[in-house]
Length: 263
Length: 350
Ligand SMILES: Nc1ncnc2c1ncn2[C@@H]1O[C@H](COP(=O)(O)OP(=O)(O)O)[C@@H](O)[C@H]1O
Ligand SMILES: [Mg+2]
Image (cartoon, rainbow over all chains, first blue to last red; front, side, top):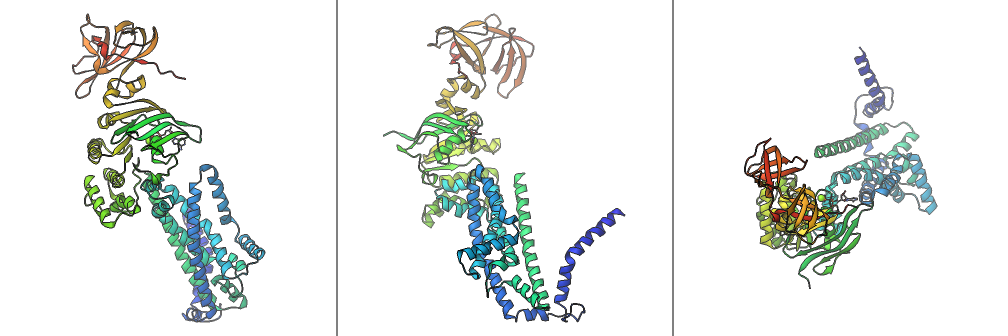
């Protein structure tokens, strides 16, 4: 009795969490502008989506910002992590915590403060500021994907590379980075996901003429009901979900490997 | 100049936490020598190797390589290569690329790299393993990859940190012979770290005995075994009876309630000393001819000989090694020739 009650409770929660998305997905295939009536199944909104120049432009910005910011953040964050790792224990936890603050900081605070900084520095907001903002908020995630891998690595492989005649920079490029590659790739995927998913920070840091998909959805929603929003949101949900699943799977298999090696 | 390839002069190492790992170490290593650093775990062997390799800076003292001070030379510019304690192989590379790593860094022509790696893999008996991932190899094979990876660069000096520590006994014995052969064939100076005294005795030209960061003795294996400088060395190299004694005069020492003739001279009158006697140097005698008598308390067969423990009536316990069997509970007589008695200055504990 209590067991089936527990089960029912669990399903209720899942339903509660996913019902809105389910409704969204169903409506994106609804061949009627009304949200209340089912007008039959259609791909119409998806097709219209790819005819809408504003949306295509926003898609372009989203992908461009996503790729550029995650590549740049991955490079900066990886070297930052190696630097943090190289610190002697004393300052290590301090540095680690300082770079963790942006992760737990509310997006709106990050967004507003970045905007204020750009205004203060007199930088016109647009593609460049949006890119800078995304790089900034992505770096900590890279650091925290890479640091555990560094700790797992046998520190002597770095020394072995030096021993064989490679200078410190070469040793990092040729040995350390390949050894921690799984962490770097996971970090990159996470950064890319967070970038295409972000609304709040982008909203405050982009400028006229430059919108990404989430800002586009927001402004479409303000202009009125448009079933294309459903189609676009559904696509974004599926893509982000898929990426997160990959990231999770990678992290899980990484820790599994570590456990196996520890035995 | 000097015929030493490496000299460590007055080297001390104090870690940040204040721990003194090495205390005024002096060591001169000849070209083509097989030198072993031997001592119990934590005595500073790895630290010494890391100072030579450039991974650790000495707090004091100088490192001299072929007559030049190299304290400030970074590791990648030193003409030594290391076989690390746990191999430290590059797991993202296959066997060939692991071994070729140093040659690629030094921009050796491709053909030559191929040739030298092949030669090296033959030498360590790993021909045909080029394409294998290192993680798929056994411990012994990984070990040999690590040796090949270092040796292929033809270093002047090879540093080896307990390279056989992870192998089983049989494999260890085989590799000891292989390593010694390689060293002689290639004419490379080996600085070898181990805590296994048998390994040190059988492979080395000279042995450095370390304890708590202080050199106890530097000598050939035979001298270390036959003429240990102090009780620590005697105890560490094989088993020994170490007994408190008093030097009565030259060539006469008092211990175990007897005045016993020996061959040592130069001690102060009534100086307290350690008397060291190897178990195999104690002869079993008739009770009437013996210097001491005692009751056999245990007999253990060790293959070639028996380990025999004897307790005398005044409470001294002796360890004997003899090929003749004795029986528990019997009373036997024991004697030691004067030249088998080693008198050592007491190590003063501060
Ligand atoms: N980085 C370090 N900081 C503090 N103590 C250290 C450090 N590295 C080694 N030690 C200490 O120095 C001593 C000698 O270490 P080591 O040279 O590794 O000994 P071993 O002879 O077993 O190779 C040990 O007691 C060890 O704990
Ligand atoms: Mg060690």
